[in-house]
Image (tube, rainbow, N blue to C red):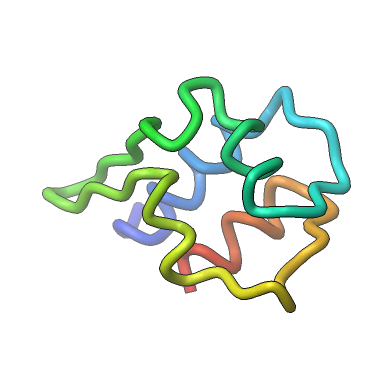
Length: 75
């Protein structure tokens, strides 16, 4: 499994209990079990949920699924 695939899988898993659609960045962070501090790790790469704000734009919202969130963050 590639680093992108592993991170994608971890994001989807972390959002397994989230209620969709997610309308705002604040709601997205609140959907992670440990909020902004949750960290996905793969092959020396670490990505905190709080870092997602650096790659997400208002146009990315609303998110309709965990897979959609992971797709946007990983790309």
